[in-house]
Length: 527
Image 1 (tube, rainbow, N blue to C red):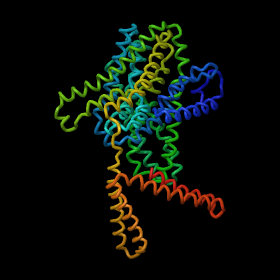
Image 2: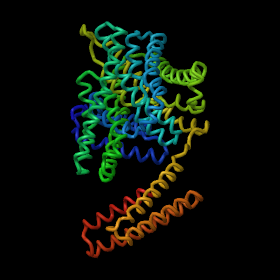
Image 3: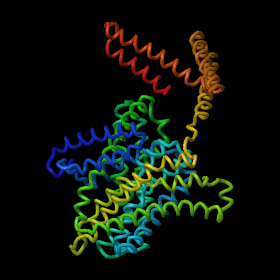
Image 4: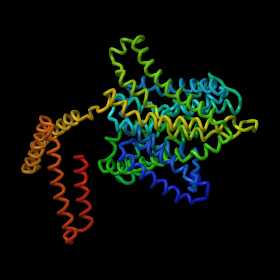
């Protein structure tokens, strides 16, 4: 608990509860304003951090790396479609590794050229701000209904780039602290941590799947899934591998295998638990970003304001511009150098590439890395320009989240990229195949003498009716809402009768809850 504390001595449990309430209220405000909640949470935390008299909340970076990061990465990876991820792996790695390296180098030289920041310190700063945030990317992509391939690339990049950025950060800090750096050593180390992290994550995921298969209780399995991210992340870090890649690979593997491993009850229960957990962690993460401003301002109290402004604008500009040039430039170069590859797999349109190049919001990992900077080097002297690096990292996070996050929806609308198909046609077609398969199975079961013919006939009529309704909905999209409203009206009538029966004592509370849960599942299906 000491990893998150108020410097004024406020009780830590009370502090966390207050932050959770604040994050929830800010999320409600974001919904009312039709804004992505990470933006509102950061601005809300920023406003709270500047209020005189309120506790100053100090964030230990280990809290992010060991408590926040694993479950958030695992959850995002769990829903990452493996076939699409594999199909776009080249584009994802170009962004997650290539762009991270390019951004690190560009930031280092821009900071050196504009304010004279030593290159070694510049590389530390570049590594901190190079990886975009997975949480912000997912939250904004979901709201804007971007094309599916664009979402896969954006989320896939955000899942992997933390590993590249943190490895670069580790070597850059070591170069400053010790005063030595080896390119070949860095490449070998990166290969080791990457391969080792992925391998360990897959092993943990496979073992988890074997465990889940042997446990029937949905509640116990749900609890065990909460330990999964840490079972991958912590051992990987202890062994010197990438905890990020271990967690991501474990999440993708478990997510892909979950339909054949988890029972329906487990999926429903675990889904509700994980949705709540991810919301709470996201809320705390982004509000804590804003709350760190007082500590950062204290670190740079002696720096000239003009120099700080020039440095911040230069680094922010470099971070944004390098992403634009990298994405548009690499796409154009691929079209020239590998036309056959583009013929087999067409590149995204320039409108989509423009949106992708503007969706580079930074977040909690960059802040945690900045806060994790050591206070001294090997000789005992203070870590050079630590306060300036903290300020510049915070400036990049704030500018990209707020500037790009607020303007991205307008850019998407202007370029006509949003409003992608939500898979409605695929859902209808898949539902039709499943209903037809059920009818065929009923016909097969009807050939067995030990099954009641009346029950099978009744079931066949129900499935045939569902198939007819599906065909009617497919033929006339206007019937979809009408049919949905009718079903919701009927379910509401059923629910009212159950409430009356419970109130009159005709049924027990436990029976009511069981029947209520069944009605809730039917409503969830319609929504």
